[in-house]
Length: 393
Ligand code: GCO
Ligand code: MN
Ligand code: MN
Image (cartoon, rainbow, N blue to C red):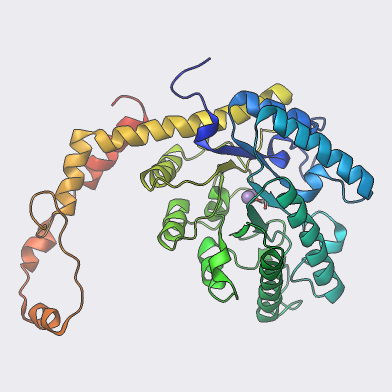
């Protein structure tokens, strides 16, 4: 079916080999789906209108592969990319599956593990570059603790910083065209993960040797697991010029890490996130870090993939409607000019310090009774938004 919501490569939708390839294993049950070979994933995603596919090193190359085996796998995968035009915009390292990383990778208490994690990441960066990736994601799934008796959080942050600094220097020494995006998550699989939210990560970036190379990869579910509004984290990342990548999915509050199809839970939250990205004309990749329900067979996986992109495009169209809706825009214009606009539809001037401005402010009288009485009409505004989202407007 072709309609206004049919995805095309210029929409910049991407999936991970590990997302559509997720076999449906969970802590209580075995895989329910057979592995899908990477070349098949590439062909299917291209057919569905995606722009690219992302990967962890071991999604493509098993960690015990010999050099010749690695080269053959990469050659076959590259051939599939060339045949379809699908890109690999982002790569990352699996620093969580191997039992060696049970106490973390860059923050393990064992110095050998910290060094091995760097060695593994260097090889994975090389692989990413070979496949054309210019974005490298760091999700520290095992960088944390179950007990604070085990580890001093300040030492751990120091090791984390040393690792990212080392890898930035490597990328510079190799003259790679590559930037890093840090992805926060509050917990799971560790009891508590270091740098648990996008805001924590942002502050950490400015303590690095090359902060200009490092940005953020916020994930909807991870902010929600922390009880936060993801679109606010993304807005702050945009404001700082640090939104390098994004992981779109869905999550119910208070549950395990569900990785639901984008927009399938909290469609209103998804709407405001899409609106934020589209209003900002953000040029990055819309990556879906989620997977099909465990109930599904492979057909269900492709339903999941096309549904993710379709929902994004529907919400994008709803955002355009919101921006063009006369009643909604009238209410917003009233807010922008409330309390003395700059004239016409122009917002009030910013309050910027000068000695004169401070004196004028000190002398100003405010009609506080009127200010205290006024309402903001947000009930009306939100109901109009709901009606637009529910399709009756
Ligand atoms: C998770 C994470 C991962 C990362 C991936 C890329 O909760 O498991 O979101 O899917 O995004 O490892 O770094
Ligand atoms: Mn996740
Ligand atoms: Mn993620």
